[in-house]
Length: 526
Image (cartoon, rainbow, N blue to C red; front, side, top):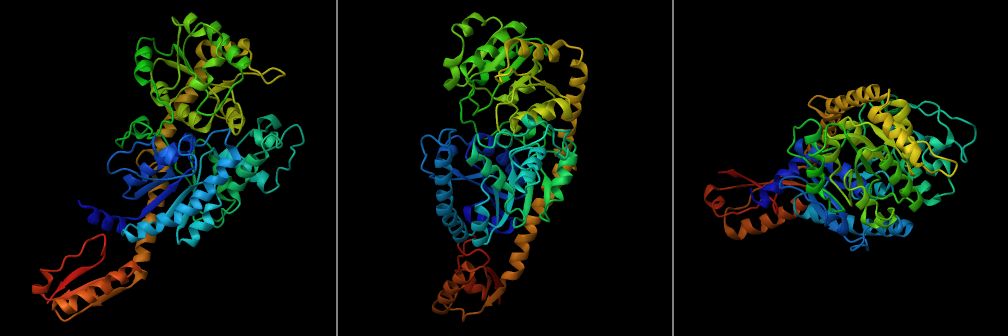
């Protein structure tokens, strides 16, 4: 199929633009959701920074990628760039988004929907000005959404007072179990403002998409659905299909900002017995102090289990001297790995995690018990759910300095690997794994919700087409009359009008119209 035919097909099937914050933990879930949309017949384009686009790999017929410069083409977003980056990102989007919409319209692939990251609500008014419908994509759990929503509406006043407080879908929370920006509002005031703004204009949005599954957070999901008249649906977990329903040819995330040592990790794991390995990773952003790294190292070593520990290159100098060499018979330290591959491996017995939502969903979807060591943001609340709501793990206790000591970490690991609660925790993990697969499999709750969203996209496209009007042009069938009326027809098409040329069979043999440049022009015969 040529590009012109592709453009014609897109104009009929619907074209969605997705715009995540350009960091790995936000791009990957929205990309996985995009692949599900593509499987429903929707054209999807990822609009992201030049830096992030360099690491995105998409297969033919899958998600298209259009990069733009955010001023950080060589470094991308980092924790240190903070507010400065977010302001430049906003300015870049405001400049380049209208250009992209105009270009796609001109090419005959008009964009009708924008699926955007919930942390950039400022893009919705711009999308509306450009004639787009807007769907908000939330990258955190529904329980955390419920916390942020209540704070944003003043239902939970700051600073938090009282020994406990109530949040839909959760047991009573102590203040330190809230997201860190809420528990300590002065710690990162600008980020607190950003997470609360996620709900500032949800009533103006056209759809709310939650990266979770209904039977995992049913009460929180139902409560959030009642807070706005905007349609809200669960569409997760957003993992590659290979690890869930296996209905799509999709076995990995499309983006790795760090280079994974996949072969080394898999070969090492293949030599280990079932459920004998402790996997440790704190994600792509968390930076632990040197003292905490030392306590983790000793805790792992003292547990006497085989271990696979991901320590990013930027964190390697925090490891105790000679640790890697001295523990080489028991463990493997690597700068990055394909986490899904590791978690799905039969040798892995538990996961020591920072409780980022993506890592949490991965462990839940693959039935792996967790030792929680939350660092900041929503991770403390996720840890509460892991231990006390879903009962698929334990939280390693901290001392008065907020440090997880080697003894407490060793104790937590042993509890999951050999303790009395091990069997019950494992059963809970397997049950939630089965529910995750059920949600995205054919006819499951998330699958139905994605199907509904795709149908809405197509409905809007068809509605727009039916309102656009249909004009028949009838020139005298000679070149000097046909050409000017055809050129005028192309102008009409650029304004959204469908045009049909009605001419003689003889003249029609010499007329060439492309499906892209003159999309909508067809021929009648005399």
